[in-house]
Length: 168
Image (cartoon, rainbow, N blue to C red; front, side, top):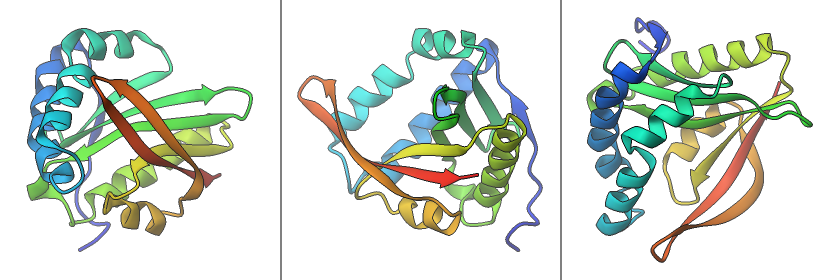
């Protein structure tokens, strides 16, 4: 039943980096196989989930990595990402395929919205590939297209995204 699945969310630390990398490696091919080339998936996984990159992000006091039910998924969220607009940015939300479509994502998103509101932020933003079916989930959670964004990530690859926003 949606919304009743147990959801335990706890802050990750450097010792959880191997687990975060493993979850990313097990979710990305499934999430992006129809959207990105295998070369781009590999490049992005190597770049975005390098242990040094994850460790540096964890050192930012506003940027948190959270584990979902110990090992079912993870979140990367940066509170006060845009201090002038009072926006928090959800950088990553990945749940292992076997735990998807059971209400876990909704529970996590509601938790993140609650945490963002407690910090007196005016909105929550995220980037999503323009062709990612996850856009349906984000719309159900009240996000709307705010703008389009194309980012050169190197090696001839780009991220062609919508930035979605939920006003709080």
